[in-house]
Image (cartoon, rainbow, N blue to C red; front, side):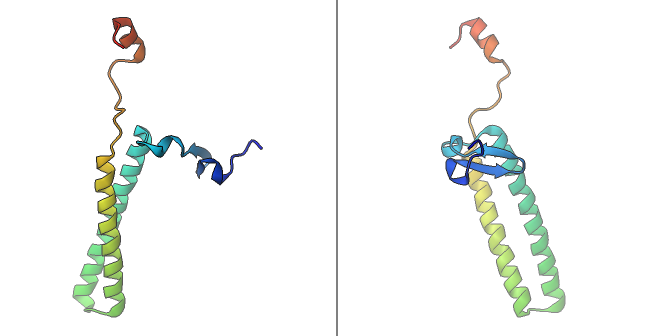
Length: 110
């Protein structure tokens, strides 16, 4: 009863259960930064694999397996770059402020 099911709006991430209902609008700043960092890492890895395949293509010549691998990794890299571009557009607006909420209330600013 105390453990949420997958259909209850929770997704498991490691040891913690993360609510997915709050992410219906814009993502939380920390979540957004973590996902963008993972996307950048994935982009770099896919680019390295694509470059290695290009070198193999130049050395060994075009084979079916090399061409298919090159096409698949190239497509994945393209989709990852598009996803990164989309992620930059939905950057959360809740950037950390210099003043805390107590200082804002003291000044009388709503």
